[in-house]
Amino acid sequence: MLTRRTLLLAAGAMTAAGAAAAPVRRPAAAPLGPMAEPAPGRTVALDLVAAERPRSLPCFGGRTLPLWTFSETDVLPVVRMRLGDRLRTRLVNALPRAGEHTSIHWHGIRLPNAEDGVPYLTQPPTAVGASHTYDFEPPDTGSFFFHTHCNTAEQLGRGLAGLLIVEGDETEPYDGEVVLAMRDWRIGEDGGFLPFLTDRGASGAGSFGTVRSVNGAPFAAATVPALADVRLRLYNIDASRVVTVGIEGAEAAVVAVDGVAVAPFPLAAWTLGPAMRVDVVVRTPAAGGRAVVHDLRPAKPVVLATLSAEGPAVRAGAFDPAPLRRARIPEPDLGAAERLPFAVSTTATGAAVGASLGDGPALPGIDDLCLSDRTFWAINKAAWPADGHRSLPPPLAVLRRGATYVIELANTTRHIHPIHMHGHTVKVLSSNERPLPVHHADTVLLYPKERVEVAFVADNPGDWMIHCHLIEHQETGMMGYVRVA
Ligand SMILES: [Cu+2]
Image 1: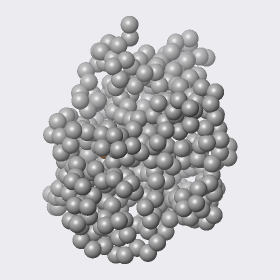
Image 2: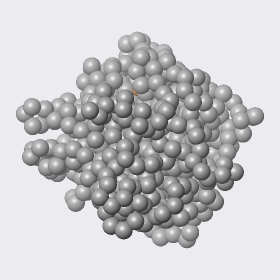
Image 3: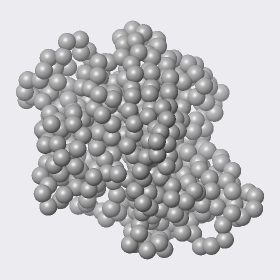
Image 4: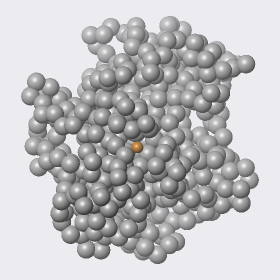
């Protein structure tokens, strides 16, 4: 019988990080391709209409659910552009419920603050019947995505998300590409949606879906060229579930984390918290063979995708995947870094937390849609929903533009937290619990009681959210912001 243990043994030694550190064959002196410089671009026009659209996905077992989506044609739209292109998006809010305002956050993109899509902090929320235009040039290649940033448990839970792929990072073209987007759906016995935010889930590990899906199906079945180097873009866009990706039946190497190139290293298993992505290159089997992508986290591994090889062999040599191009992310100056301790914790009652906060600017018109009335979590003992949500809390820290900061993320809780930072991509330096390969990330998984250090140059002015991407934790307090001035 296929078990988690046999798969892990087959995959080789696995650390708690899910990363094997041994390099693949390319010389360490040239681990990445030349830095990606943008070519003169074009403007990509994107029209997104957030609306209720009843749909039946293959994973729904014949049921039709009242999804909320951005697109008439695709439940999960995939936007592709090249580095150097501008993205001009017109969002129309046609959601069916009065007061259901929305916005779009472009997850992982180092964009200007005004385009970041956080209601009240960076833009007024887009009311039902209103529209909003986002206009920016992504500075980096990679596998990104977008989602709303208010009442996210429900809006994302009903479907509002899309993928954003910025191309131009391949030094040698791979032989194929497969995009795998994983998420759950919370469907009840009666065929309707279950509550998206529950006290039990929000105060614990999250409210999991009852139905898992990959690209809207129970699992993805892709046909790939035989003996070829095929790129997999793996996305965890679920609100709660943590997934550990492993591949059986093919050699595989990690080439990017959260869209940012890493020196390729063999994939044994890689853990993706909510909102995290990994790009993997696999050498596909000979024609007629099959490789299987699993989630190794459950006791019994779950099939995420099958890759069936067919056609003439593409490559003959040993597996030696081409590296991606280095990103244009400024290198932190660790010698001059200022340290910021950020502890994530459970908290006392909301009232006690509100009383602990200072005065923020009054925000006329702010409402309760973005936040639960429950407060279970905090960052540095401050929970986000301050005094009835009518004012912003003060920033967790004010950062000097251009200076390097090392954030010491400390998890004092018994739960896992994927901590997401807006506007910057951080370099993950170390964990007190597990070896980590050198890599960049916009979302960093914190295991229970773990401490992780990340560094970045605060080069992007504005107010930037830092929050747990386990959405129910975010909406019950584990959210704050830093100001780069
Ligand atoms: Cu969390």
